[in-house]
Image 1 (spheres, rainbow, N blue to C red):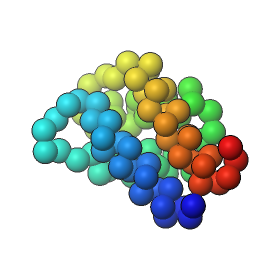
Image 2: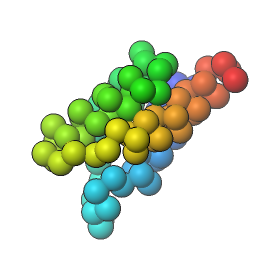
Image 3: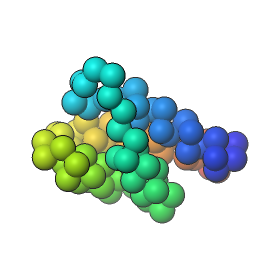
Length: 86
């Protein structure tokens, strides 16, 4: 899987996550920031903290770290599949 395909799958995963359950809303900016962080982070806890910070800065709402770590595992699975690390 190419990097472009990995990024597309990661963004789709984040769009489906919808942590604030907003109707007809996309998290384009936040998804782009998370995918950029995904490029260099391999630890689910670290990525979860980054996700929490990104969304909190944009929406001034806190997401429990457990939810952020849960989505980070999904994103890292996409990354590892793309990089054939599995």
